[in-house]
Amino acid sequence: MEVTSTHNGSSSMMWFFKDRGFDDKSIQGMFRRCRRLEGARQERANENWAYLKSIGIQERKLPSIISKCPKILLLGLNEKIVPMVQCLMTLGTKPHEVASAIAKFPHILSHSVEEKLCPLLAFFQALGIPEKQLGKMILLNPRLVSYSIEIKLAELVDFLASLGLNKDGMIGKVLARDPFIMGYSVDKRLRPTSEFLKSIGLTEPDLQVVAVNFPEVLTRDVNKVLVPNYAYLRRCGFHDQQIVSLVVGYPPILIKSIQNSLEPRIRFLVDVMGRQIDEVVDCPCFFRHGLKKTLEVRYKLLQKRNLNCSLSEMLECNKKKFFMKFGLFEGYALSN
Image: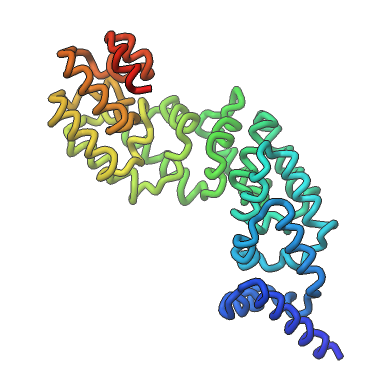
């Protein structure tokens, strides 16, 4: 009797998936990963599918979402899915944000609001993260709900505190600026990166500047990204202390693409602008500006008027102030 019931459930769900465009390989994979599908009720699956559509998830995206987390079709709608969705909606400011978060990490629906989401929000609030930022963090990186507060997140907080970020809500600022940093291993990624930055001459206050303003730098692989970029800057002729100044002034210089970002800018600086490479040490923001949209445009305008200035004078101002500073009002009018 039980075997027949399970077989009927399996057959029923097979037709459910077929009707919604799943291919055989996807269906078999879901049955392997989620054995409970074999005894699932098609009525519940239909109900959950329809609800997901009703909250703004496009039907064409549903097969991908269900393939990632097939047990969504088995969850109690009013007991599990609706409470989580409603709670997420209170965190969002735009209609599509919750649907987008579920598409990124469907497993969020299988977690408990009381046991996972509420404690997580309380943890972040205790770090001084404003309520408005909490929603952005969770919806941008919904995988946060699956992390252990006591193990994974507490270890990250301890690590950031060890960098001297344990005052004025600085840890909260780091997490709010880059919610994805919480997904990285402290021992395998974050600590090696911080040790590398220290080894090239950054002080603790320098590290704090990097962590607070560009925490994504801490998440990059030392050997694959930071070391090659550092070596490239050395080959360009920068001395160790100059590289430290560049990194502190614009930390992403260590993670930008050499071929697509650093090299073209250095070439433009030296070959086109005819400047000494040392000049960027006093103006690291040179590497932040777009090559085509800002560097080339401003250089050509100055050349046209035969005007000379330092890199800082050329770049450390917005577009309007640049045009006003050099009396290029006609150029400003044309560019708007």
